[in-house]
Image 1 (spheres, one colour):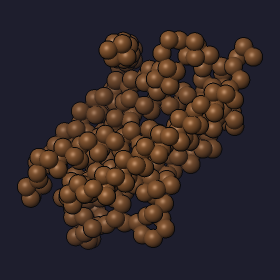
Image 2 (cartoon, one colour):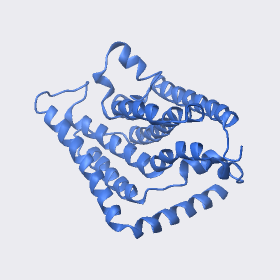
Image 3 (tube, one colour):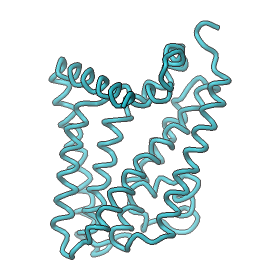
Image 4 (cartoon, one colour):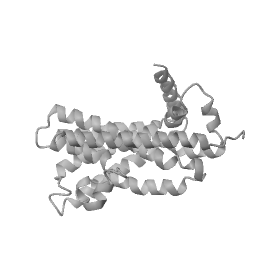
Length: 261
């Protein structure tokens, strides 16, 4: 409850600040909507030339895209702004203020900034996902839909851990620009269906750099059924990513040179 009350304070501050700059607020909403339209149009054009892509029909791809939009909206709403400031806090010594507070510093660094404009986009993304599920021509079991949503939440959590893994080396490198650019390039694989990849690339994108798990595996669980191997694979990879992230975080804190040093 303590952390919940603190997070509610973050929310109130973020919404009041967003309303102070309303032009920027509505422009960012428009930008997110355009991004959704561009992705929908991209796959619509592809399906004008093929009935199946990566093993999925057009209707299945719409559900996948709905999941992509929801994942992206959650990330942009909850984590994106915080992770953008994370390397700056390390380099400027602002991390000092978080280390002395009676709250785990990773909690504040990851959740302090709440993007109110992206929250509106989250509502739009949720609407698109619901629309894609309702229009699906075959009946979907309620249990499968529940597993899909639960695994999508796991995928968002996995994406956060991967992002942190690429940012924590700032403790030693003092610059995150190179690794951030690599992460942004790899992040594009989240928005592509897993079935289009083959061979070593498919194995790498589901194990070492598991970006293909974030939305594709929850969608597979919806259409193919939540098999034990699929669930074990996704949960195991996510747990491994968090172990790596927390190990790096603790090592980074030991190497941190504060502003007062």
